[in-house]
Length: 285
Image 1 (cartoon, rainbow, N blue to C red):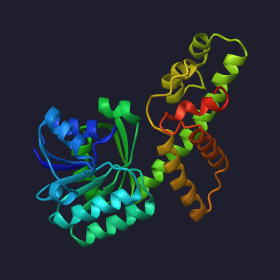
Image 2 (cartoon, one colour):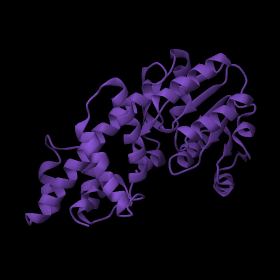
Image 3 (cartoon, rainbow, N blue to C red):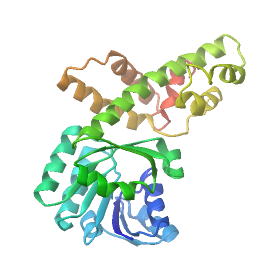
């Protein structure tokens, strides 16, 4: 079993680290809020470190799942100082492709392996160990990372060189933004038309309209419940990265830009911590 440093114990990171511990790995965890690290160790064993550098010292693999570009740059920079040549850094945070490429270059210069591997599936899939990981990096780096990721990911795809994992996550978020907006309009129409929402779902969820969002979010949206999965604030962060990349590469994303503004409306309503399906609130506050 490997010595692993896990950096970031939020709603995604905590269960991912738990799956690694359950497989017998020796974990040292670090979180910006020390109380979360203390609680995790009390529940799952392992050790708590006071810094990313301390956690990474002597680790064969360092895995990060934090907040944004600045957070990743901070913890990776600290971890790189303590890691020995041949060690592996896996970043599961959704950040810019620019930063992923930058960190991969810095890691290579130190003789380290680096994989940008943002994930999809939300908190429920993290808890069940069935995330989807989209990986950017060298063949050797992704091969080294795969056995660790198999503890919490049911699908692991090497999509290309460093940065391509982040670019693929942007594609994922483009798709989700459009689907959730369409689903919100569909649920709203169902309500205004006086239809039985359960029967409508039963009728359409096995046909061409079916999606993960429909199956998992239609029932909760129908009830006006929005405390599930990925928060609006995080979606806006991801869509901001996506739109920045589109401006740089010339891609035109009119629907994504529009839905991003709809999510800004929700933030103005104080719904930034509700999940992305709360787009329905624009029609039914």
